[in-house]
Length: 333
Ligand SMILES: C[S@@+](CC[C@H](N)C(=O)[O-])C[C@H]1O[C@@H](n2cnc3c(N)ncnc32)[C@H](O)[C@@H]1O
Image (cartoon, rainbow, N blue to C red; front, side):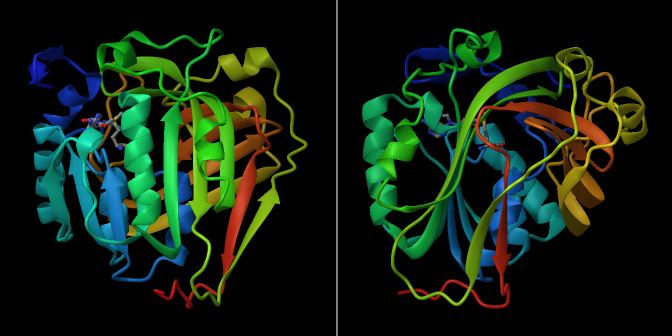
């Protein structure tokens, strides 16, 4: 991996951990597409307009573009955008990219889906409020917003890597949920997730995730929210003994099989995949991709193609979203 180049935004010296991964085309810095993005994908049609704010090297943008969505991916990292463009070209995927600062971004079009994963928490409160007010306005009726935020607390203080990337402690617990209280809540999760990135050993992220749907629009599909009632148990010691890169066989020997597994599959060449080995390296692309969530009560283990890539301790109840009648899609109002 190349040495990290120091990046400067304005007068601020800035050395975020992700720049190193963005400069290396052979690794996946953040892993594969987010589970809830794959979960919500049946709601989107080919040609649905998608905006990814702070897309990084584009794991979610690439995934939605590969199923035909009309994606615009924005990030202020030139290296991230260049890597995304190179991977898209290599894989024959078409999308629009833009190098821009989302803290003073103006939306000019309407989108069926706007998402931001681990990027809004680098904006101060007034900036994210201004941005999300626009986002709400510029989402089509019946369209969705998907957000994942880091939310550090006393028990899980901000990690050095994230602090070095100028994390702003600008979200209170439930604040994003309250900001969307006039929309339909599809998913709201609070959990602590342990994972690793190329060159960065296992660490935690306290996370809030929101998927919300703008009222209105015409639907002929149904979204069901269902709690995952796993009865399998795992002690704290067993949970903390799980390491990234374990095989599914190692995991079964260590904690036993779960009673519930939630799976998403994507066939053909896939990008942005973490298949971490014990040296925390990963692959940028892979043939066929299976992401599995193994449930043990409120503990969830993430496996990518049979290799452990993360583990989470849920504060909210783990949920499963089902979208029926997947041939029918959002009808633009
Ligand atoms: C942890 S990475 C997440 C990348 C991507 N969303 C993902 O989930 O893989 C955070 C990203 O937010 C971007 N970012 C942070 N502040 C930003 C800003 N003000 N404008 C645009 N992008 C920003 C960073 O450049 C970085 O690519």
